[in-house]
Image 1 (tube, helix red, strand yellow):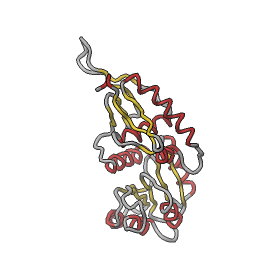
Image 2 (cartoon, helix red, strand yellow):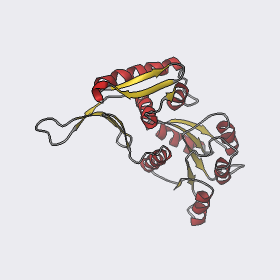
Image 3 (spheres, helix red, strand yellow):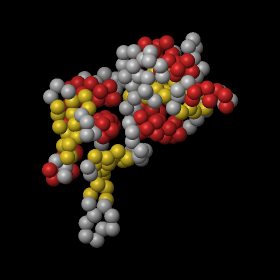
Image 4 (cartoon, helix red, strand yellow):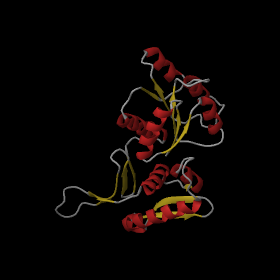
Length: 239
């Protein structure tokens, strides 16, 4: 998932970006609303975290513009950050189109939980667990596995862990969110990296290949769609 952070305080932005990056998100940071509008006119993001107290155009006006037809990302979830604890400020932010807000200072685990909820809502998912066939990805608990049918003597099915690297996790999460539809290679590339990390299209193929080898033993195939991208499919054994 690729996030845009709009925050003018360098120290605050650095801390938030580090925390979000450690949680597996690709995070790009800009220090003004004007720069955010320029970026959003050219690139796509899954969610924006916007500080209200920005210089020039403030975060409330930026949110209003994002919800207008002025930018392509008008449906993108927005979480606003504010040091203002007044009820009217919070109400105004939500009325301008924000999906949620947090008052500074805040704890990182709560921010991560709110972001996960907004992303699930935007992708029409109701659970923190994404699944396709036997494959399950717990986005809150950061656990991946394959659901095994109950055997004789077992009361319940069990989850066989699948060990994923950070970028393999990102690829699988993106594929699961969009399954059974295919995911384009360009979108996967954006989900894997921000501006400060260069990943080539060939590198995407490497992560896809590694992931494919971990899914196939569990009856899930990662098919290549020539000239476009990839799609998850159930093999005959898993159907």
